Amino acid sequence: MGSQWTKDNIYRKSVRDGYRARSAYKLIDINQRFNIIRKTDNVVDLGAAPGSWLQVLKTMTDGQLLGVDLNPIVPMEGVITLTGDFTTPEIQEKVRELMPLVNVVVCDAAPHLSGAKAYDQARVMALNEEALRFAEKLLKQGGNFVMKSFQGTDFNELLELVKERFYSVRVIRSTATRRGSTECYIVAKNFIGDADDDRKKTSE
Image (cartoon, rainbow, N blue to C red; front, side, top):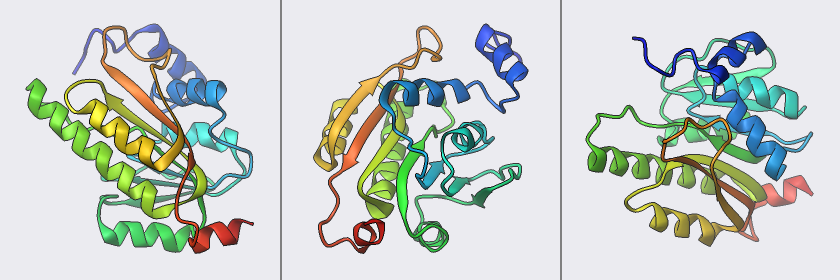
């Protein structure tokens, strides 16, 4: 289905640069501004299909990359992909098996929107909270977290939850976000974690 956004400048640039989606530039922008990804980081990408963030991550780190999505992700050399729901214990355990040490979790996922504003915002917040729980369970102490959200009802409550778990939290709007959108990104650095977490000891 066509739309007014299909052929905008960023879309055309993504085609020229070989990215699977225009969202690639959002991660590039975020990392340039906040240095979320380091060269040796292991990164988990939630809601990774079609894989544009994984393409960008390959240029940012030599560490292990793993993408999870409900939809299959076209294979990419050097990247592990899982098809399934990242909110389930089964997928979370599989991620832990494949990547015992997770330095960074990123999430560009969003639910399919119905057009009913209150309903859609509630679903966005629920998905955001699940992504935060995933990060809490798998992220090493001191790790980083990036998550797409939409400003609206209950957003400030979500932000407070993130601030309880990370030492540095910023809300930013990417330069690649479409004009007029309420889309934003929560950029959280230095996960407080658990002092007794064995994954912290593994990284030392």
